[in-house]
Amino acid sequence: MKKWTSLALLGLTSATLLVACGSKKEENSSSVKETQTSMKSGQNKTNQSSKKKNTKATESSSEETTQSSQTTTASNTTSGDKATDSSQMVPAELVGTWTGTTEIAKDVQMTVAADGTVTTTANFYQADVNPIRTATTRAKAVQASGNIYYWETDEPGAFDALLPGIAGLGGANAKVKAGFILEEGHYTPIVFVTGLNEEFDYSKYNDFRVSLTK
Image (cartoon, rainbow, N blue to C red; front, side, top):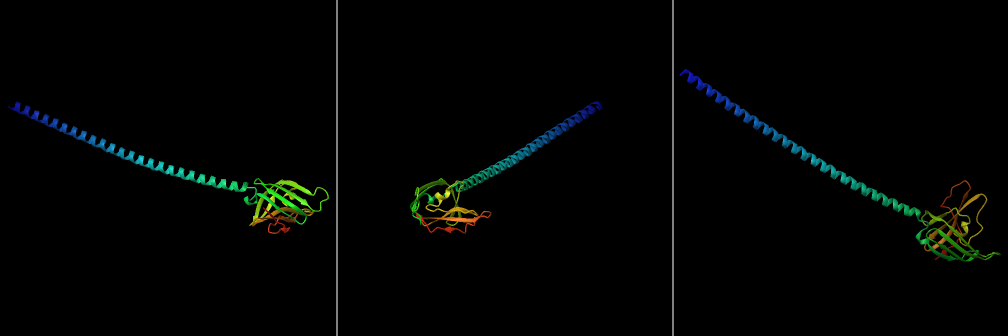
């Protein structure tokens, strides 16, 4: 009888141990699954956050690139406009043929091209030899102020072309520069005079009281 009782107790104890072990395995398995689920969730959140950051970074980079491109375009446009202005040789209203007379010449004609080429023909009254003179030069008209301009050129004999129907200019101790006033359809030749070692004052000039018209 005692033997059977001992065997019964032993069997009951074994069963209890098996149940306990099974319960722990299930708990461990459940814990592992929860841990894995938590890790996957964390990874998903991290990936989503990373994707959002990358998207924002890409959008920001795209905006900066667009702004930079627009700035460059605007800059290039501005630079192009300045280049056009600086390369213009004469005012548009100066281009054409101007005619008139002076105190010492008749049938004065001056033709100005857009590239700065100026060709002048004048018939001088008191010329003993070759009364009709033709001169050609190329110069740039620079605006001094308002409607007052001066001519820039390094070509010799430019005065005959730029100061139509006028002669006898120059001096040993002075610098002379040709210019003009362009106003109300009239071309009025003028000259600026200064000392050899002085700068020109473009607010002071000599007017010949002569005007040509188109």
